Length: 483
Image (tube, rainbow, N blue to C red; front, side):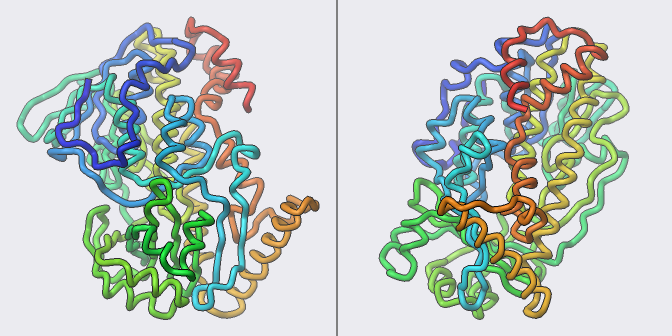
């Protein structure tokens, strides 16, 4: 069992201790052939994988180079495709206490604040079967840590410096060699394990953007008549401007207000923890509407993160089938679609479900290949949608921006008619520059169920080609019925 040497500085209610032991996944199915899985990286994806693989009956050792687990980042979005997993894992009630359900996404013009786009989110659970949340990254990380802890041995201050993909084994900076049966590289955008799998490192491409991130105490907004509405009516509000945009929303039960400001990169670094200059941040957004200037006046310090893009990989699996990649190590996401953590958590869920069926060592290769086959197309499409939003949000003033705003207004009017009991054509919303207004994209993104995807693969392909798992059928039937 893992323990915190230095507790995550999460909200006091972000506590899932004991939950995993009371939760049964896969209808209690455990792998008949038990693996010792070595996971490199203690981020969202690594912890999700540790939890699900542990629930599937495998032994997990997780290596983290940091000396302690500390609070990093700011706000993060938990979309229905992830919240349904977290509910299934037993932390739904905790999410309700520490997170915020946004009522809508509102898109505004940068200089006037005029509303040009609107999509209701308060009915997410009704539409997609699970809620949409805004949460502090440290709170979500803490919940995943608590879920994974009973199933993993955590090795802090354990930097992996080399990998033998055939043994398989990892060598630590101390010189210690640790052997296992499967190595998972969940070591982030600068993944060392990726180089082992590919034989080279996938090059990073500058987006030209960087992101300031800051958190403002909500009490400051509530004291201002012009700003209190941002707290009283929790929405995700976006301001779109030439080469820049802002996203802002409530976290921590509306006690904090998270703000992310995307701007032209001017020499920042690709790091969650790099300090930015608050005065320069204010100068960079001085031409935005007065409410933005008020909000930024509350910011004393900020983080500044360089946004780098990477193309989809040709493979996530070493030819030995004993080393594989997960999360940002194989599909890093730009933040414009808010799906980075979601994709990593889905990876862990899919992998755990697949490997709960492992009966014999000969099945490992086919099951790992199924993981890639199920995940790579979805993550590549999500990466594409993220890149598209960068272009949409940052148009310079002119004809293309005017056409974007007109199309967003059309989608907003259709949404408002629907809210008033009228009817709107979903076909008219398809391809909207407000991608959250596109019902087909929403269904593909938010109705996705990682477990159901595995169940479908098992019924249509896996059971015939890999072999009967011997597990019970009721869990499969329930998840498959959701497709």
